[in-house]
Image (cartoon, rainbow, N blue to C red; front, side, top):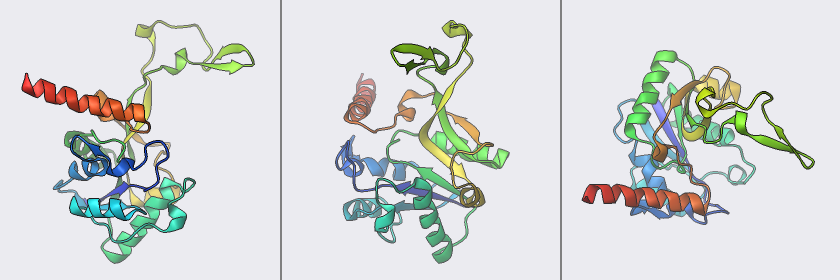
Length: 231
């Protein structure tokens, strides 16, 4: 099996300026996603698609393939991740080789582990369907409400259930997306009706850095890990 690992890293970030090159635990954020998949036999290349020359330089120094800077029309706030990925995939299969699947690695999930990536590959080989990383929902949908004017209405109708009686609920955590190139091109989505869940229970692996508060949590995880090593 030949899988292309694709890291998407746009230069502009309104909530956390310079997020992808900001240091987390002593190394740029983007490097975490490159390092975790190095030397996994099923991965033929780690390609980074970016519109930013600084990100490109850091990615190259980290061992990734960065053959070009992303076209301007794919570097806007409205550009879809699917279009970005298909652009990179089309280039790779034209200039390098055909691949069996595409693994999307978002830099905002720095703590996904190598073990989790390999588990995802095993699921993909076994099921032959798209695999998506999910984690237990922090707020169960059966306990969530919406506002109807000044009145609260439950999202899910029914009797309020005790926590121990609630059915398991999961959310897509952004840490892992793997699907065939045919599925990506035909379905134009990483989320499909037949996707297989890669359940990730480790809280640090599920973090998705989108705000400064998320960044503080990510730094706290590093500090806790260092403290546990030194004690």
